[in-house]
Length: 195
Image (cartoon, rainbow, N blue to C red; front, side, top):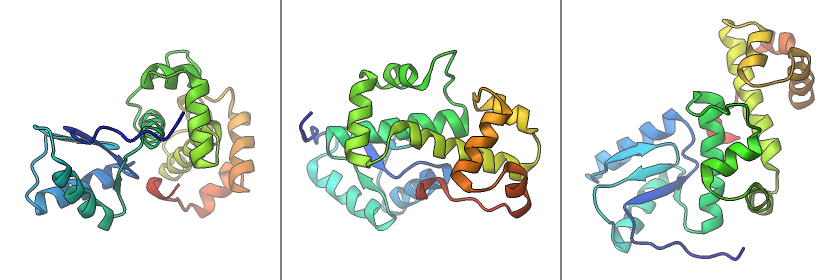
């Protein structure tokens, strides 16, 4: 797939690195502060009531860059942003349900491309696999749930679609170097937008 520039007259902008509720708040505050009217802000996306001109988009991009965000310009970058948004919404916000699907079928159905295309685009640009990204997001969610101390490891395992608490524990230790109980004692988390 070649690096095709997206059509730049749009009423919806895809925004890179806008992956958490704090990010949405920052973007919203910046747009309001700069008197830029918008319709809705979601993870990775800003909707407007009208088509934006190239000048308006450049202005918005300049404002967003100051806060560490950027308007996505290429087809591939937009796909990566969509993949990350769907994964984060599923794991951290339970906005989507897998409904007995594996992640490859789930992502393909949500984004509208076959999984091999999604996987190639993601791996080529991110230098990481979708699977590893999903694992990192799951581990961050496990950390959060461990710190809250409201669910058992079995409940967390079930909630995040692990085959067993032992599988979750092995994966957790492989990624963090700690068992879930060791982590619980020292508890520190990364922010979603730094992963």
